[in-house]
Image 1 (cartoon, rainbow, N blue to C red):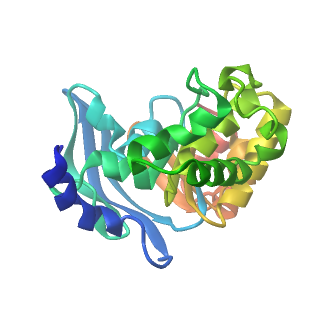
Image 2 (cartoon, helix red, strand yellow):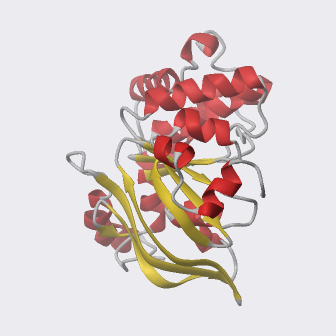
Length: 276
């Protein structure tokens, strides 16, 4: 990881490539990827292309490598002891995210993440959304922050519900609202890609439906990758589905095709509930 002001300046040109000036057909390319935690290999020879401004769902049984791959896209696995990419490459808009010039902090600005359990900070709703702007963008005027916070909350379909209580604690919101607050926090720094790791796992059906509606709206502007254990959610929300088993990508393709006519018997067995 590069550190310091001069290193950050060196990282900027390549980091800027991670947010394309125009939408390209492929947002993320995974090429012959092997990944391990210490001596335990977690991913084997993964080759994959993820389309821009579409929703891609990762499905498969627990421990199959879905979340590991998701966390590779913004190098969150760098924070895990002994985790390492042993072979292959990941490119975002043709830029190698493991190139020496790339600062992972700048990468995570371009590739936001929403976790399974909503994790608002113990701060106000306003400060939750403004936090990343203050940290990543430096000083801003209050007017600029106000505009950015409103924009992010509107994008997360939360503004109308919280506009009159922006200075209340984010922890006072319902579970579904907290998850949308976390989405707003991720969107505030204007990423190009949004990673979602089982974002509805802890939510009730009504809150889940709101998040799914939000995903459908957000894909007009963002590339979204979602890990889900819900076959129904993958079928409803995604344009492309990738099925993983024991660290290997078994099948990927158009969601309708994968669910209606899977090419691999393992995929068919998992979707039909025969294992997993």
